[in-house]
Image 1 (tube, helix red, strand yellow):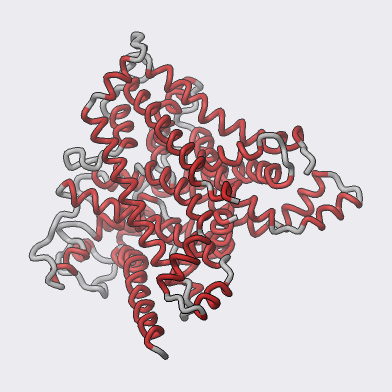
Image 2: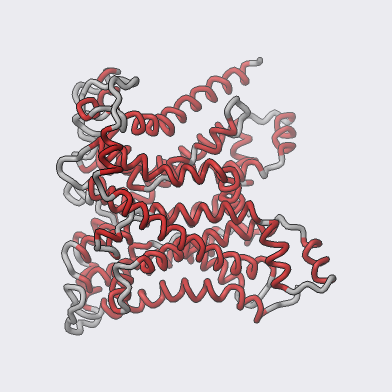
Amino acid sequence: MNKEDNIKFIFLSLSLIIIILVFFFPFFWIITSSFKNPEEIISTSTTIIPRSFTLEHYYKILFNSDFFIYLKNSLIISFSSMIISIILSVSAAYGLHKLKFYGNKFVEYSLLVTYAFPGVILLVPIYLLFAKVNLLNSYFALIIVNVLFATPFAVWMLKAFFKLIPNEIEEAAYIDGASRYIVISRIIVPLAAPGIASVSIFCFIISWTEYLFASILISGDNLKTLPVGLAGIVGQYQIDWGFLLSGAVLASLPVIALFVFIGKYFISGLTEGAVK
Amino acid sequence: MKKNNIEGWLFVSPLVIWISLIILVPIYIAFELSLFNVKIIGTSGKFLGIDNYIKLLGKSNFLNASLNSFYWVIGNAICQTFFAFTIALTINYKFPGKRIMANWIILSFIIPTVVVVVIWKLMLSSSSGVINSVLIDLGILDEATGFFSSPNKAFISLVLINSWRWSPFLALIILSGLNSINREMYDASKVDGANFIQQFLFITFPNLKSVLFVLGLVGTLLSFNIFDIIWLITKGGPSSATTTLPLLIYETAFTKFRISQAATLSIITSFLLLLFSIIFIKFMDPKEDE
């Protein structure tokens, strides 16, 4: 090894250690803390290795709270938003990718800007609009909003996946007399399946983590989502940390579980979409 | 290429209609509201014309929030660019466990923001937070400090927490940009005697232009948009130091019940952001050079 390689090696190891500490330690910390007894969580002398082990917080959240109601609401809203988002964005992405039409650049750029469109600007008027058409306090209110937030980037990602499908396959199908509908349902969708899967997770995550609109558009306790439920505990004057931590861990589990299965595609989808 | 006007629009129109309805109708409602004096939702107010706008632009809390938003976007841009490049350049090397790390670094991005809030409220707690105890053990601090107690500390802590959430995501996007750069360029530059910094400035950076364009535009708008992390940790305090425009809009509408004022704020803010986007696309789009 020469001198430059040595310096590189030291830098690399150092930044690796820092990255692991900064980005992975917090997860270790809240997961282990959720199993500590209440005294240890708030004690001032902290040790890395937990000194106590208890399941009381999980017992409390699973059997003595509205956790399952919130979970059900979150699941219904996130799945419905995901399915609607996928249908709309597959169609739009295909149109933008394959069919050059008048105004396609404009639609593309508008989508990019919409992706980042500050939701909070829409908060007050959407609240009023939904109040007028009687949509407040309904699953559909949140689904409408989640689709709005998820689809622009979903289209962006899907377009990148569609680009990977060789044009010849499609051309050959048309020569054999296939219709546009057949080509999309039998060729494009199956070939882009990993991409569609990753875009689905993206849409699911967007809806699963949404807090702002869920906290304003829903006021009934029986329709609240998990983030709103958790935020309710955060806002209390005396925080029950064990309860809150076990709730936080449980609320993260579904997205993490999804991620274990299709995370690889998710990452490539996110990154391809931005680069191409 | 031949144009497929009707078919093309047929494919994009369901989404375009959905999005425009949910954005344009509310913006119209907001604009209408901004011309009236409506306080509590559901009541009607008297017509004011552009009075709300004139009053608002001179208000100190509007100027304070705009300035905070400006610092917020700049602070996040600097922190996130630094973290994201550090992560991307580190993961770009071969080391054992690289794949696992590249997949899981994004964990902070996929969990709900509320969970991010829980994590950092616990870790940064002044009475029992692990960060405080570590800093005291290392001798950096004499006694536990409140990370959200003074205006500056609260602002910086929030910028760092938000960057913690977003940097890994940005890093992965930069990483895929890095992977699309032809390796031979680095080898050739090495033969010519270029060092690491020169390689970064003259090969890596220019080749990431289109990625950085998207990140610059979307990233700025996204960090401007951040609401829940700030609201759930500091509620905009202490003494409005962390009240950015989104928080001001929220407070005006839902804690002070001044609906028309909140609508006016929304309209002004959308206008500013639209202006920013148009200027950014016009002057920074790397495709224009080709």
